[in-house]
Length: 321
Figure 1 (spheres, rainbow, N blue to C red):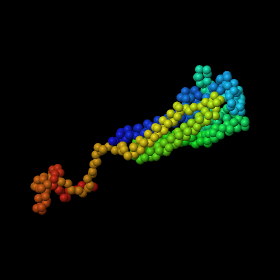
Figure 2: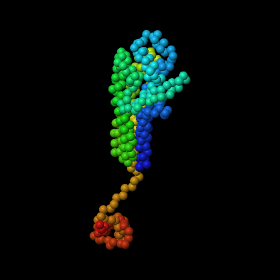
Figure 3: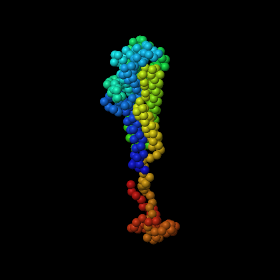
Figure 4: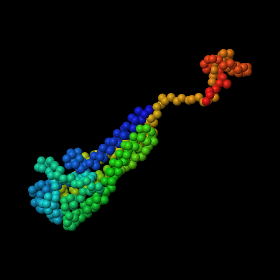
């Protein structure tokens, strides 16, 4: 197949590796820049509080319902102080908040600082910092438990994404060596396997934990017109990264046993060793093999002729080193 064929064989997994890396970079860039539309639309989780904040009859309607007055009062106080915005979107490093106009158009007004092992805590974000407000969420055991699990898992999830990005970059660099040998393909396959494990683990963790967050918000805060939803764009990019990663690992494995890079039409030349006999023509017995055999049988040695090599043997002719 040759080097050109080897390069073509490596091109597919290399392209899939680059695609996986780009997806992971997009995941990490979500909610880092409020001015970039692509980054604004990439979030794992969204809390919509616009109905509670903007509806002029919200307080009256909520007061008439048989709800937890402590939680209602805490949310109303946070609203009066301007601590509750219309929406919140959560990314890997930070969250963003903003306002929504009467036409439903959303405008991000603030994004938090980038932070390792970030997790979204509504108690702190809404500044429900007094003991009674924190105790409100403790009344709903599921709400408290989910937030605790989210807090603990957020660190692992963040690390998994960072390791996946690093391994994907390493996979691309090591993959260059795979162009030249199957040993390079083997090493790249090992790196790709580790990368796929971390990408899948990060994807399943983020999907599970934020799905739980949506369920808790909907059950505990929906009566107060606060809703939650998953970021479809972000999860689509995350699982595309998983798909590209898995496919690249498959093709890296194939490249170990296929596409050797050696040309099947390569000619192999064998050099003559010194002091070997050559067939030469005989002017007495002819150039046939039979004549040569007859001459040796009679005990006669043919005189070397000034000709080209033929079919008889010249015992005393050799190559000098």
